[in-house]
Image (cartoon, rainbow, N blue to C red; front, side, top):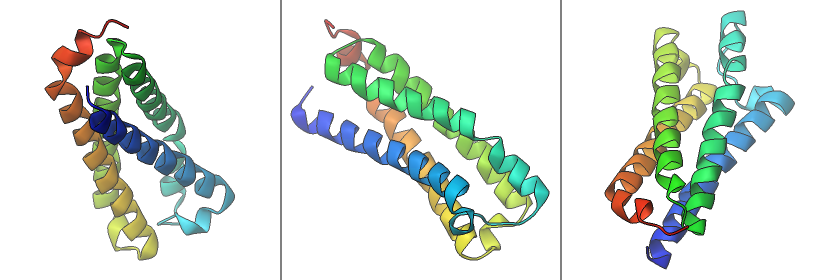
Length: 141
């Protein structure tokens, strides 16, 4: 694996983890910055995500760590994290479309950006891992 490939993966992982941490910090400390709705249902929906997002973040962290260590478990964590991201994207988008969240102003724009970033990074992790699966699995680590 080249240094350039490792750097790209690391940057993608840092971006994913940063977005997760910043979003949840804002949700709990400055909710008005990221909220798109005032309804009880919306708050319940958003409050159901921290554990799933923590799982996603852990998968990304373990994937990047495993790749840097040359561990074959990198493939497992990359595919698990990518799949978790696609799943969360699908749940979030369906709710947002059904409840008109994207049309709620700045919060809706932030939500759309997060959704697109989630899908983009998840697809990137899945493609990156699958196209390098033989190298990842043959790592001696």
